[in-house]
Length: 271
Image (cartoon, rainbow, N blue to C red):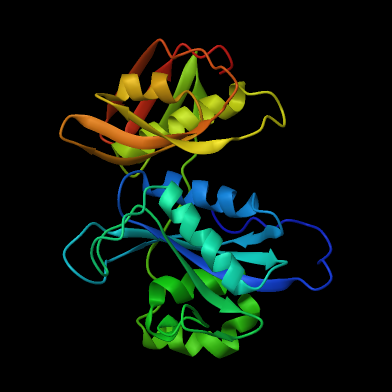
């Protein structure tokens, strides 16, 4: 994800509908989870990501919980938004979403914010019924759909204006390894392992499905994952998350250093 927008070129497909999906995460590896969700949306049949927003850091709505990282994507969708809803719910579940408390913390939240054709069913209303009240949804929506500024710009100002943004995290090859400086340890670990695995994989390697991963420490998690991965939680002496399976074999790092949002993977022959 670029620091601003990442637009994909290509002609629009006949009959396709533009849909804007909002993304949020405040548990685990927040940025890595948003990246994984965008990749997952882009990999769905009949769906193409056309634009990606900046990352926004926002205060939570509801009970006390960590801050959110929010973003939005503009999609070109061949199916109706109601079909897309079912697929977003499945993607949330694959990336650790547990619906235990209304407005509670979550690894991933995917909301259909807006579509070219309004939808009103028992299961789905688009535009989102609370869109105009939520700066954390409006700001990224206007990043990917500036043509909607006349309609939603005043609502964003009334909601307090755009929240603070955060530059996307970039992994750096340093010596014989990879270094990532991120929001926190969970993101640093997931983004470093993912960058290393993607660099070592052959071009066009299939990404597989998300499979659960659990390990007692960061070094074991990096070695067991050895693929694009996310972290759901790191409490009670265990790191829980998921990694892509299958994934081309990647040699394990010789050492993993993780502290205060900085992860260093040593012993990477591709760095």
